[in-house]
Each structure stands twice: as C-alpha cells, then as structure tokens.
Image (cartoon, rainbow, N blue to C red; front, side, top):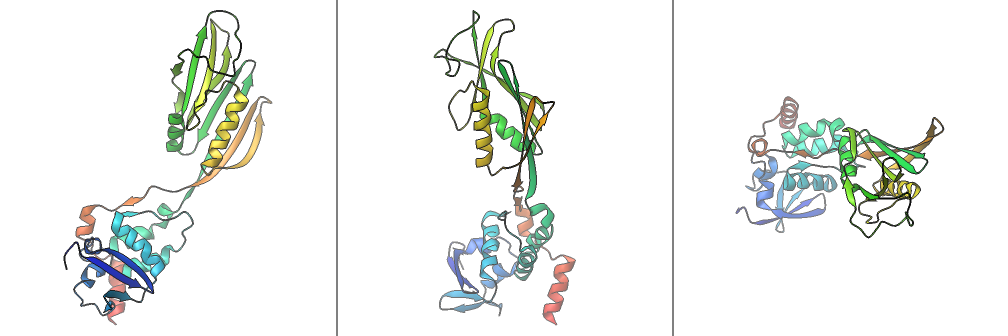
Length: 273
C-alpha cells in the first residue's frame, strides 16, 4: 500500500480513518505489519480492517501514532488496560512508557497568595510549588509607575492619561514573585497600578487587584482550599489544582527500532502457546 492511502479500521465496532503512513510510524509494530494481510487477528471485511479489541482505548493508541506523544486526559485511569493494548499492537516502547504511570498521572500543585495592606500601599507575594506556573503568572502581571511632583492628586482609581512606566516584578526565587500597588510618599509621590492579562485595566486599589487575581486563578482550575492570617496583618489564600504533566515525546529513533522488552517477550511466548 502507498503511504498516502487512506485506511479504515473497525476496532471493536468503532471506526477510525487514518493514513497508511500513520500506522507505519513503528515499522516493527503489529499495525504496520497488518497492512500486508498476514495477521489473522486483523481481517479485511468490506473495505475495512476489523480487529476484535477495545475501540475506546485504540483512540488513545491512534493519537500516540499521530502525534508521537503520550498525553492522556486528567481523569484517565485505565493505564494497565492501555498497556495491554500497546503490547497487543507490539508498540513496546509505548507500553514501557505507560508502565511509568506515576510520571503520566496529574500531580497536585499548590499556590499561595499573600496580601498585606500597609497604610497607602498594598503588597502581594505569590508562592507556587510549580515554577512554570509562577513564570506564566509573572508574564501576565505588569506594574506601572506614575511619578508626580507634589503631595497629592485625585482619581487614584483611574490611571493617568500620561504614559506610565512599567516596572520589573521582584522574583526572589523561581517559585515566588512580589509586586505592589498604591501610593508611596517616600522621596516623591509615586502611584503604582497593576494590570493582569487578559484583563486590560490598570488597577490602583489593592482589594480590586486581589479580587481579579483570585478570579483568574479560579478560571485556571485552581480551587481555594483554605485561608489564614499571619501576624494579624497578612491574609493568605491557599489554592490547589491537579496539574497535567508534560507529554512524553517519542523520538524518531525509537520508532525505527522498537524492540520487545523482557515482559513483552514473555507475552509473545504465551501467545504462541
């Protein structure tokens, strides 16, 4: 068959359409050999290859062949059954990766927001167990400064029409960030506004910024699991979510030579018996 031929598979009653080249991603696999018509487990009926296996699980197998990545849904739990299907199709490297299910399962991620109101300024510090999340959040938060000569001005809640100067967020470590808003009367009058994408507003009031930040975290599938007060001044909001691990990528060299593992060899021997 030509690599660009369209193949229809009927797996346990579910039909799948794909390219021949997709089934040949692992040349030594049973799916690649199926195209020669020499495997009795695959029968060519009415223009379709039929195999009496689990069609729902084959959907994940086909996705792996198409993307060369193992990326399963957060609520996926049938790791052993999917390993069994990968062994059946002689996708041994895929089966080995699936056996490392502790690396594939979602893991809990903790994030804490600390909020301190001190006279005319409000300070925020965000801690997170996942440095990638803190980095992404830091990329969405911008603090703007507005400096003026004098002791006061009105309408703090709305940013001035004059150009505002963006400030660099403090990053004490890869796992936390610090920013502030409000008015600083030290050497000169300085107002700080905060913008958090995708919201385009420049907010001055700390309570408004806290509300926006918490709302964004909830939309990112974080769940509020607790609140506490530190030294009667700092409010702490603790969040948790299940974070999907990065997808396992299968290299081209692994598709070219996918040799059976000892466990797969044992399965083959049992089949022969």
